[in-house]
Amino acid sequence: MPSDNFAPNSVWSSTTPDGQEQEVTTPSGQTCRAKKMSIEAMIQAGLLAEADAVTALVSKHLAKPKAKKGPTPPKNAESEIDIPSLMKDPKAVSEMIAMVDKIVPHIVVSPAVKLHYMETTVGKTTVTKKLTEEQREEMRQENPDVMIVFTDQIDLADKMWLFDWAAGGLGSMLAFRE
Image (tube, rainbow, N blue to C red):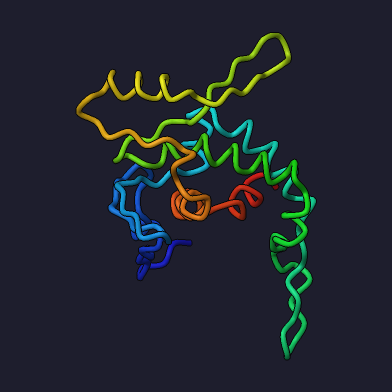
């Protein structure tokens, strides 16, 4: 039976809506205009298939949190990514960087961010080829009034920070995958 004193809490309404733009400053000190991007938005943008493959690779590098002095963490405590273990897996690192490179142009609104490579798929084979300076200049000429930054010009720490800020990072992807 409903309570006469019911008052909904405001947790949902205090969350920044998906797609809302904000000015952010990355760890390197660069500022940009960026937007939040939920898992649902990644699905709509066609990015989750790759993200799912990455989370499958990353999930091999999970560790239960260790108790610091005091009580042992509960058995249902969320696992954390074992960064040293992950860094020893070149395939997982490479896939993770490629995924973030593809997501960052969807997160950053200004300046315009473009991938620094092109992918061509023939049959079941996908070939990745880095853009030449001529191709980059051509893209700049097509949009002379827009500042274009390519993903290889953005520091990896900044890209990871943007991904974490916009989507909750790999932890949210792993939770969604479960």
